[in-house]
Structure formats: structure tokens, C-alpha cells
Image (cartoon, rainbow, N blue to C red; front, top):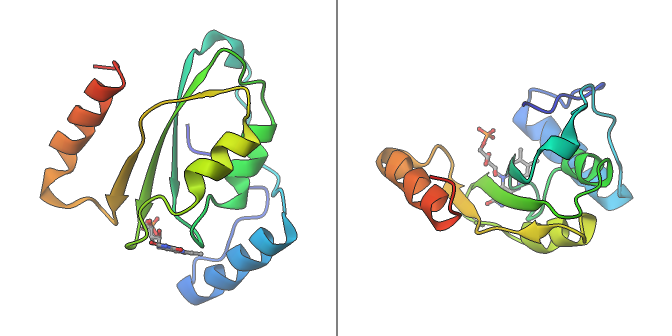
Length: 129
Ligand SMILES: Cc1cc2nc3c(=O)[nH]c(=O)nc-3n(C[C@H](O)[C@H](O)[C@H](O)COP(=O)(O)O)c2cc1C
């Protein structure tokens, strides 16, 4: 499921850099448009996001605080521009302290030619293949 926002960020790269930094500094929790009604049916949540300012985008914080993750495993994956996970794994663990954390995958921008095999190996490491 793609998380969408009530008030989307700008499509302009330079503007979204500022918006994202503002939200991070303020500890904002941007409102999400969608909600998973049957979250209790899921044991594993694959959580994907771009590395923004070395952490998760603040809508990910809204998402993680919006559900009870007890007994669930979060398996994170992120795209990045060189900073890999940054501090995002620590941020996720703090935002969803009851969740178990699976093995993460970080991908440089679009992931390049090895993306398919990297995803395959990552799913395997998490027992999801
Ligand atoms: C607001 C913002 C902050 C970013 N901060 C970082 C960063 O701290 N470290 C990094 O490696 N990449 C950073 N990037 C690059 C993104 O991680 C990269 O653009 C993204 O993973 C690629 O997916 P996209 O095509 O959806 O942008 C940032 C990008 C944006 C828009």
C-alpha cells in the first residue's frame, strides 16, 4: 500500500528538501489519507521509504505511531542517495518499540542492475521467500 498524504509534499526537489527538514525539526506528524483497517491480520510489515535527511520521512512516523506493532516484525527497506539507512533504523525502533525488526535493505537510488537479485536475497534473509 502506498501511504498518501492529506497535504502532499512539493514535487520540486529543492522545495521538498526544505519542507522535509522543517517537518523533521518540528517533529511533525503529517496526516495520512489511508489507513489499514485489518492490521491485526498481518505478522510482517515491509516498510519502504526514502532516506530523508538521514532518517525516515515524517509520514513514516505518523504511520508507525498509528498502529500497535506488538507481535509484528517490521522489515525495512529504503532508497538513498549515498547515506544508506542513516539513522532511520534507530528512528523506526523508537517509533514502534514493540515491533521486532527484520533485516533491512538499502538501495542506492533505483538500485541498478542487481536490484532484482538483491531483493531476492533480502527476502530470503528474512525468511519471506
Ligand atoms: C528531502 C530529501 C532529503 C534527502 N536526504 C538524504 C540523505 O540524508 N541521505 C541520502 O543518502 N539521500 C537523501 N536524499 C535522497 C533520497 O534518499 C533519494 O532521492 C531517494 O531515495 C530516491 O527516491 P526518489 O526517486 O523517490 O526521490 C534526500 C532526498 C530528499 C527529497
